Image 1 (cartoon, rainbow over the protein chains, first blue to last red):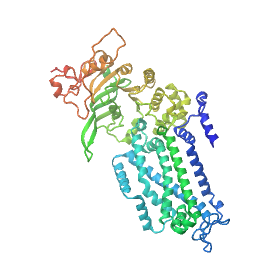
Image 2: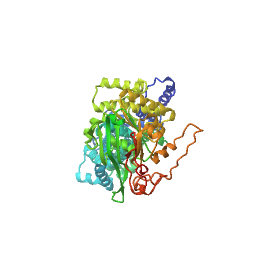
Image 3: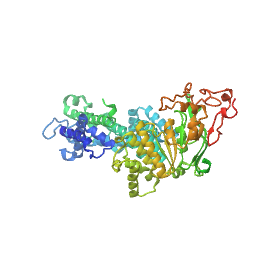
Length: 305
Length: 328
């Protein structure tokens, strides 16, 4: 990986003389800066590893993650069960592998829909201003007054049983205010730019101005916040599952696996049940945060260090 | 002589007030009178230069004419059609005839669009041409503003200020406008590049049969390019007339002061410099009567109470000053 990074650096130097090199858009320039960031590359590799595990979970896991065997509960690690079994006799390693799939899916889609909602509302508020802005901003204020975790707990408690889709929807519907504010603030600063005025002076539609002039210039903050939000979502899922308000058992998620450590007996004697999912969460979140930091430095080189 | 020419644009009593909000309830507590009762005629094929200090409302005037800002009051009549109160949707069809070149070449081009996309965008928006036709036009325009065709693949950050301003001009011309407003198009450029861009704009004026409204804070730039010159002070027109009259025979004390501050490249010719006292007063609380009386070296009692109107002084020169309407 090191050599590849260096090659990227080298190509940019002689291009000044050659003049034939293709012009790079600001986005491509940012990507190039990103690829020079070693920590971000490490994060990318780690995350790619977990994504691959999630995709090929069926091939990697030796057992079904939900098949229980009540004659073999809380087993120690063996050649049959690499990380032992949990209190229902399910294979911990298989659950860990499949947990990657569920946790990353939830993290990604919760992030995706939150960002979609945040970008939509933030764009409308920042672009149209006036009463549209007032309405949306009061709604975000209202949402931010309510404690995020308590709100989710309440909704989950009312709904009683939660599916993955429902869980993602609930998170997206409660987590949008922060991003909405960031997008709105970015739009407000872009609104004063002369090229936006220029677009208006040629008669461009609102739709075109938002999609061609605002959003491409707001892509930095959007991507950075989306990345960091995905890490938050994974932690949130784990935390909620841990206290029993997340995805119900027997669906394997990392949070659900750690729930086993609720019991002191397992916490003390069966570390192989709860340490691996803990490490998995830690590494995934760290990796995503490194990527997020790398992206932020890449999109805003002035804020460097 | 202007009277025989055809009017392209008429500005009638145009006003643009910005509300000043204050207090906890964000109520309007006053207005900034950025453009206050300005009337000008712009004739086909001419260049009208507008000068004034920063804060005199000259940029707001340009933006209000183009309906980038909605006027508070007054009319803008373009080729006989009043465009000051029509809906933005209907305004779109007039936009191809009226374009703007902006002041800051580093802020007026979208950094995420290639130069080709930037120049093509007006044609795309107005849906007047097919794809192939548009691409050809982009290359053609680039050549006309003195840039190589390869420039269309590049991004704005790869160009210098002067080159960017050329791109801005190419964008403005891409729909064959009749009327172009230059909002201080050269004030952000180096002096050596300024003249290049000015010459380019003059050449293009002949080639495309353009009418310019050229806004600047620099009298020497305006002198170079204008046929007529208007001097603005605190949102109002102080004096307007043919270039020769304004430069050789300025009547308004403010114009005189501005002209005396222009450096002359001749050490022997010593002139009396008129130094103006104080700062430009706040446009949210302009002085009564003639807004210039607080700084005017020739102010008298009447100036403090009565607002002077633009009065014709011969040869198309109009002055808003009591000195020429019977004095004190």
